Image (cartoon, rainbow, N blue to C red):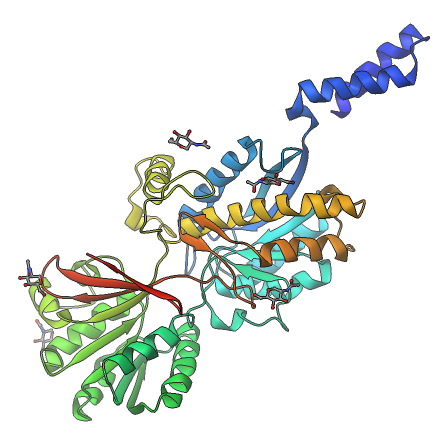
Length: 436
Ligand SMILES: *[C@@H]1O[C@H](CO)[C@@H](O)[C@H](O)[C@H]1NC(C)=O
Ligand SMILES: *[C@@H]1O[C@H](CO)[C@@H](O)[C@H](O)[C@H]1NC(C)=O
Ligand SMILES: *[C@@H]1O[C@H](CO)[C@@H](O)[C@H](O)[C@H]1NC(C)=O
Ligand SMILES: *[C@@H]1O[C@H](CO)[C@@H](O)[C@H](O)[C@H]1NC(C)=O
Ligand SMILES: *[C@@H]1O[C@H](CO)[C@@H](O)[C@H](O)[C@H]1NC(C)=O
């Protein structure tokens, strides 16, 4: 655009008599016939962890780029703008992220929003962002601590908080008439805060917690204690690797079968208990026996319904396109594959929200490209737009709660024999939908 009008200008000077009025008209006509050249850029400053505790960027970055490509091609979303991603590898490390955040903020161009992943990195970014009047939109952070509008006033996330489903869990406990439960947790921030919140709600519901056990890496002693204290209904909070360790111990202690119920809170791939793991010496048959009947409550991250949402892709089409973009890499070995729909939907949430601000900003004589880090009113407009997000994404319906956290479905499954999961979903607190 700038280049084009300069060419006109120089031609005009050669013709001397051409009036500026005609020049302006010509420029306008040119920018209409070449809309791409007339597009103004808006920059997103993003951090994608490619390694570290959660190398989610491996799949989330390509997913975000897929969304950006589609958004930029759409003529009905931000027609005057092009979104561009400026991204670095945070390695899921807040120390590294501090340096990168500095680079993002102190080098041109101005970023209109920040998109971090990893709870520890998002905590750092979301706490600093207020000083720059920046909205932060995370695609991968589950820490319940981030649901805090005082500490993180401009934070949103398409990843639900780990405690989102605690009310649903307690409702299930009550439905199944459980009056006494035992707990075993891996001592990690996310499980500790989830369990703190759950204990509070369980107490209010009049359910007793008779035994509490925790472990750092080796669950052998904790599992033995559960057995010794005669726990029958056991709520377990741990990651998949630790879950294999726990259930190998459970097999050895015979803490399974008709007398016991295991209720797991965590994130588990299909058939997680069959995956070869050098840290356990139980066979696949033994593991399968030990996990029989266990219940899991998981956050739904992929829309189970075949609908064409805001991006006109079904969740299955999204997965197929992501796989081809990953170029044959094994999804199970690609960090963040499960969360990729959340990264894709984060970019759509942002694009739709920015699009929504164009009208109201224009009414105030402002434009998105006027944004700078001293600017509170444009931030407030983007905040309002994100706060009222509501669209069908590939991860399900996208809405945020008052703390900016994603509302989502819970998938509740019980393993009943090989390839025979009974599962149903609850969308807290509104409705229950049964599948199969
Ligand atoms: C984008 O905003 C315009 C109004 O500024 C609106 O007409 C259009 O429907 C919006 N696009 C989408 C996909 O919501
Ligand atoms: C696993 O190894 C221990 C010794 O390290 C042994 O006592 C136990 O029987 C083994 N368990 C299985 C299931 O093979
Ligand atoms: C959405 O995708 C379908 C299938 O690819 C296509 O037939 C349809 O025209 C698309 N709709 C829009 C609005 O782009
Ligand atoms: C954001 O939405 C919540 C309800 O989810 C509402 O209580 C709050 O006032 C809204 N904030 C703004 C700034 O619109
Ligand atoms: C699946 O579960 C149902 C009822 O729970 C049972 O009748 C059926 O035999 C099971 N099928 C297999 C293949 O285990």
